[in-house]
Amino acid sequence: MEAKVGKFFLRSKVSIIATIKVSDLSWKSMKSGISTIFILIFTFTNNLCVASPIDSPGVHAKAGAGAGQTISRGPTSLFYNPANLIYSKFIEPYLDVGFTTVNYQFLSIDEEFEVAGFEQSGPPITFSLGIRPFPSLSLGFVYHAPAEAGFTALGVPLNLDGTLKPYDIALQKKVTVMGAGAAFRFLHELTVGVGVLMTTDTQSIAIGEPEAEVATVDEIFKASYMQIVAGLRSELFSRAVVVGLSYRTGTMIKYQGLSFLASRGGEEDADFEGIGYAPGAIGFGLETRFANFGVFVDVVLEQWTAGRLIARRGFPDEPLATDYIDTMNLAGGLKWWFLPKHMFQVGGGIYPANIGDGITSEAASAALHNSKDQANDQAKDGAISLLQDDEIEDDGSIAGAQFGDLNAIAKTVVSLGYRAKISGHGYFHTGFQMISGSRVIPEDAEGAGQYTLSAMVFGLGVAFGF
Image (cartoon, rainbow, N blue to C red; front, side):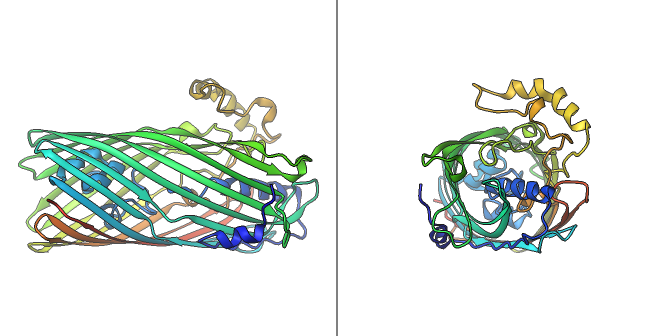
C-alpha cells in the first residue's frame, strides 16, 4: 500500500505539531516513544461519557459544566438520563452547533525530549428529534457528529526496522453517534427512560521517514459498538425537588482493518486488530428551585477498571495493559430566572484522571495473575487478547498516562449559559465552558513529565416545539 505522508498531512482538518529531539535517546526513551504513538492511536475519541467535560453533547450540559442528570432536555438527554425525554413537545426538532479548541503540552522530566504539544479545534453538531404522541410517552432520536479530528507529529523516535530513526506521524479520526430512546411517565412523581447509543469510530494513521514518498506504516481501521442507557426521574414535593438516576453499560471496542508495515518484508496488507474500552457509568442528580433561583448537582461514577486488563493489539504488536482507574465526576451549578422567559446559568465541575501512573514493580505481575480469571470471563470468542505471564515486561510494568491522552489529566470546568423562550414552546440556548488541568508523572513511571491542558467549548442551540 503506497501512501504519501505529505498528502495525508494535507487531508488533516486539524493540525497538531509535536517535535521530539532524537539525539542521545536510551532504550527507555525509545520504548516510551513506541508506547506513546500507540496510545495516540486510541486517544482522540469523542469521549461520549455520561458526564464528559470536553465536547459534552447538547447545549444544556455545556452550560452546566457537563451535568445532565436532571437539567438535560430533549433527545440529547439520551447521553445523560433518558428519562428527561419526557419533556419533549408533540414534535420537537433540536439543533446545536459547537466549537471546541484544545491546547495540550508535555514537558519531559528528564529533558530527553523537547516540549511537545498540539492544538485541535472543530465544530461538533448535534441534531435530534423528539416526539410526544401521548402526555405520558415520549420518543427521541439523536445524531451527534463532530468534525474529523487529526494531527501530525514530526520527528518522533521509533524503531520500526531495527534502527532508531525519526518518523513523521499523521492520524485522522471521525466518530459519529446515533441514538434512540423512549420515556414513560407514571403520574408526575416518576418517569422511566431507556435508550441505545450506536457509535462508529473510523481512524487512519500513516508513519514514515521525514520527506519520504512512501509510508513505513499505513493503517486504516474501524469499530462500531453499542451501549444501553437507562434512567429514572422523580419529581417530589410538588416538583420542588427533582431526583435523577441513570446507568450506562460499558463495552469493549474491537477495531478491525488493514495494516501495512514495511519492515515485515512483504507488500501485502495485514489484518489490523485493536482493542479499546468505553466505560460504564452510574449517575445521580439532584435539583431544586426556590423563588427565581434553582440549584442542581450531578455525581457520576465512570467505571473504567473493567477494561484495565485489555491488551490493545495492532501497533506495536504487544502493547502493555493500561492502568485504568474509576472516576467520580462532580458537577453542579445555579440557575437564575431574571425575567419570565430568560434564564442565566453558571456551573462548575471536577473530573479526575481515568489513567494512573502505571505500575513499575513486581506487584504488577501478581495483580495481572489474580485478575486473569475475572478478565477471561469478559472475553468472548477469543476476540480479546489478554496479557499472559510470559508477555509481561521484566519489571511488570503496566502502561500509565502517556502523551496525548486527554482523560489522563484531572480537569476543572467553569461554565456559563443563557436560555430564552421563543416562539411558544421553542427556546434559544447558549453554553460556554473553560477547562483546565495539569499533572506531573513521577520520574520512575512511564511517560514521566508535566502535562498541561486547557480548552474552550462553546455551543449554540435552538429548539422548536409544535
